[in-house]
Image 1 (cartoon, rainbow, N blue to C red):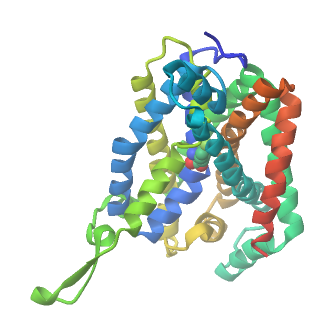
Image 2 (image 1 turned 60 degrees about the vertical axis):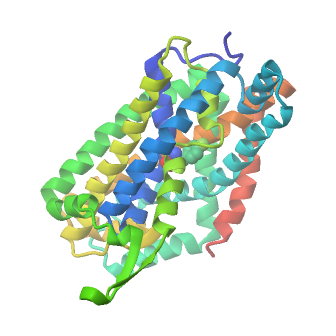
Length: 381
Ligand code: PFF
């Protein structure tokens, strides 16, 4: 059985597209800043365990369901429930995924819009020799301006719609075969730059030195008087992030699985995808933290880490304008190949049940997500 939406032209393309979905703002924006907030190595270890023990099996299940159903996640769940004589309530899995996709896209596109804005800020030299106060005010001006946020949010949403409207082969497939290799090259360039110009050893130590006290418990006192309190929060954050970074739980991967060639190895491909996603997150950490430490900056700035802290580093480093621009282009590419997978399940569903053209479906879904995103954009100001 083939999907009515078309199929990936090869197993490699499927792997690339799914890595494209997985690798996104989660890897390059969120992973570094939560690692910074939760103190480094031990948090990374818990995150890696969540990927291996929870993420990989769930990704296998999503791809498997998608490949059996060969339709949008909603129709796939209905079809498989019917085949098995199970309750159609299972289709709620598909519906909840579509709703969650909208919710994610509504802020995802806004943050991707920040990245777009920073491409131009950096390329035009607007961040050269910037001070900490200057960087804070550039970021503050951006998120404080509803007009700017909405413009960039709209541009990014249009970029997403443009790809999805063109279909699986001509849209999604063509986009990922250009974006993913480019992303990889830029990432290696950035790591090399951090190696040459930053404090690489401190970056590595921060990411890989495991200090369990920081994740499992908060301790006070000394010697025999130490008292420790269990804190589950970092573990919960690590687990949540494992789902987010692998695009799990909302049918994006199920939708991509519907277009997978029959002979693909689900286990093998899932492991490849999960490893690639993890390696990209770690490489992003290796591109960012050496620059942060090398310039005496703090890793725990939160969501502003790459928008406020990193520009200070780029501003004072040789070649910072060029490499800063490369970094933000990389971020946009990563976000773009992910946002298309947030839209695809709902678009595929509308094409199936309403028989709309992809263009109409993609436009309507994009419009709806864009409207929701306005709420997210205005929440900053
Ligand atoms: N995995 C993406 C990231 O790490 O940025 C985010 C994402 C994409 C989540 C698609 C869910 C999804 F369906």
